[in-house]
Image (tube, rainbow, N blue to C red; front, side, top):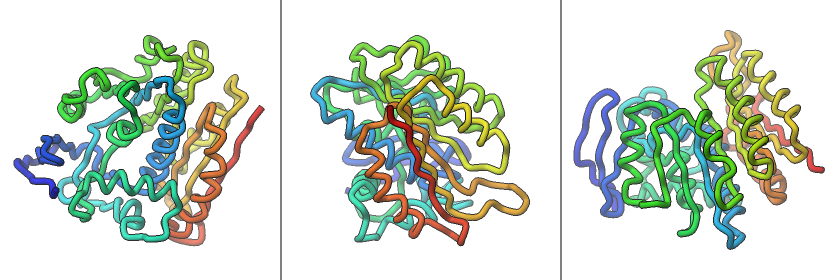
Length: 305
């Protein structure tokens, strides 16, 4: 069924449209970057982590510390200004040679675009929900009041499976961990708009690992020409952990003026043993398809005790 746009508002106000006969709210706030190369990497990894946790009968939680609005329009508003999705999900949309993990990811995006035209892009909360079973739970945190309201509207029909809290996800982890089923994926992907975000990531992980050392933690970060990025990676590798995986996708040479994001990465603590092989398969493909110049490449490293 083709989504039916029922109302259009300007600025940061939401759009309401109907998908599979359900009213869905859309936010423009994060749509500048929705569906870009960083989303491709982050969301492909997120789906694989959720799939792995669902292989066991025991329930699990997914906790998203910076959830955003959950779903974005690509046809109007902020997304049309930079059109970053065109060099991200847009490059994969019509490919027929996708590796299995990327085919799974694209299939989930297609579920939000039932007329086969790329118009909407699902955020991490929506994609995480697709990996859950009835016994699993999704815990979403969003500090921005407008986005949180939209997020609550998007998931209001999910009952106890999904909770949306207007709070800073960094602070929430202390109360959440360990989760009742003792199995969880924690996605930490702040905007990194200030230097404090880099510090908060490490503080939250130190606190989280003290309370819940066996959990899986997935930390997203941008590749930027600033020292905080490498400092963050160094600190992540020095955490009291024995099992970790680091994957990064660089899509172009850093700009001469140091402006903008030239790639992104994911650092996963306690990753599933299958993830490294999956990424070995898809990362060269992503470099070939999403790479923009000779500076494109990937990093894949891990430590397993």
